[in-house]
Amino acid sequence: MSRHASSHSVVPASSSLQRRALLVCPSVLYFSGTAAARAGWLQQTDPFSRIFREALEAPDFQSADEAWSKAISLKPGNAAAWSNRGTKRLQAGRWREAREDLQKALALEASQSVEHEPSSMVLNNLGNAEGALGDWTEARQHFLTAAQDPDPGLSAMYQLNYSLGAFQEGDAQAAVQGARGILRRDPFFLDARAALTAFLWGKGERDEAEGEWEALQQSGDGFGSSMYNKQDAVERVRPRWPPRATAALKAFLSLSNSASAEDYNGQQVQYTF
Image 1 (cartoon, rainbow, N blue to C red):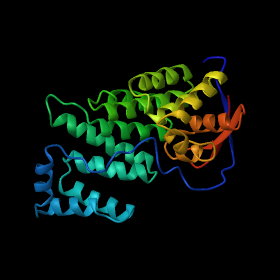
Image 2: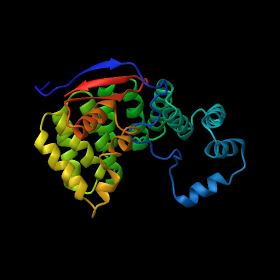
Image 3: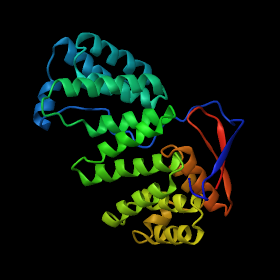
């Protein structure tokens, strides 16, 4: 750990609500095949297809969870049903159950394809669940694997999740390197620029952090400054970033060497950088 490593302590939470959103949760719908094939599948009237549609259209978490559970009971070997239930549980803050469902989805995917390529969405969401449970080492590995997705946008998103996980673990150097790599490929990835600002501040590189913030403010002909201004930036990232990066951005904006952020258990954690 570098000389800029942070310390932290838990202080009483201002709210009992859990952090409901994580780094990034892509769409719940998870099918392979063409759009036409998916549309045809959803028009089928067998019991499994009906309950799948019911789950997708459920108005709230409880209804969706019950519907996905019914779908799983009808076809326990369907990876999509496990993945979708796990994603909904992830969004509801039921981390342990989400992890179990997503692990099951990956195992089913692997067993059903000889030349299996793990779903990047499932890997990413599994990483989110693991991070929320405090297992950032496993989370980072799953984010790294997810980042092999051939889609440049998805790959960059998962790479940023890897960097956020690295910073949460105290590996600020890996976090900075990862964010800079993303920005070399896509200089207009605003969330990565904001994250790099936080990483550099947390690493003790104050002038570099100021430079990245200035670049963020000027990005996109003013779009960066409207999306990430001093008043709203922390609230914008708080539901999606782990607490240490959130606290580092908060500390940067207040020109402080410490700040607090809400952990996944609802407790406020104080970090010193």
